[in-house]
Every structure is written in C-alpha cells, then in structure tokens.
Image (cartoon, rainbow, N blue to C red; front, top):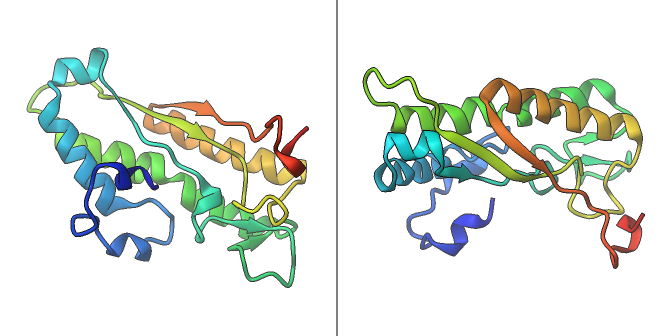
Length: 174
C-alpha cells in the first residue's frame, strides 16, 4: 500500500506493518481510519463519503504466488493448491479483519447502526508484480478473484476489478 507516501511523512508511517503475515497493513490502516473519523461525520460516511483503499496481493511478499518452483520470489507456487488457498484466504482477510474492523473501531458512535461506505477501488487477481513470475493459470486467477470477492462481500466493501490488460503491457497485453 503506497498511498501513504502521498500524505504521511516517513516518521509517521509504522514500521511494524512488515511483520503482518497477511499483507493487511493494520498499523497504517489504523492511522487512516482515525483520520477519516475526524474529517467526516457519521452521516457523511454512510451516505456519500467513501474511504477507498487499494489492495494488491501482487505487491505483498506474504501474498505473492510464483510460477517457478525454484523461485523463492513468492509465498506459494501456482500448482500448490493448498498453499495458494491458505495464502489467499489469509491475505483476503484484509477486508474483514483490518479494513472494516478498524474503520468500525474509529467511526462507530454509540447507537449509530450506519455502516461507513468502504471501497477497494483497485484490486487484481495478479499474484506477482513481475508478470513473468505471476501465475497465469485460470484456476489460480479464479481462486484469487473469488477469495477477494468473498471477503469483500462479508465486510461490505465495494470492489473495482483492475485488469492488467493494457495496450502496451507486453506479456499482459491480451
């Protein structure tokens, strides 16, 4: 999650987020949720103010999958279904265990039952930031999509799927 680089100085960004095995960035999300609770009202958060935090497994070492058995560049190899599903379930829990939970902690006020509007305006099925290392098989991509979709639905987080189909995307151009 690099969006913090836009508005937080390095001395404010927590360093312990690297210890989170699910790539969920709880300390940073906690700062952002606290800020959001101060700059919006409960009514605004439930009617029109949307907190949008992008989340990509491909950029999280704990969540990455790699297509090479001898490549130590990923948390799982594409054909290892059990390791893949374990990593995807753990990493997809970001929506419920971090994003929704911390926003609720900071924004819930007394008897107010309204739900803040949350979104991950960019997510992807990509398993690695280097396209040549990423899993390309349909079963892995489908698992990645379904685990993220299920977690987002459980947390009531809206999603926007970011495709890596780009006009000049090299390998990703298709």
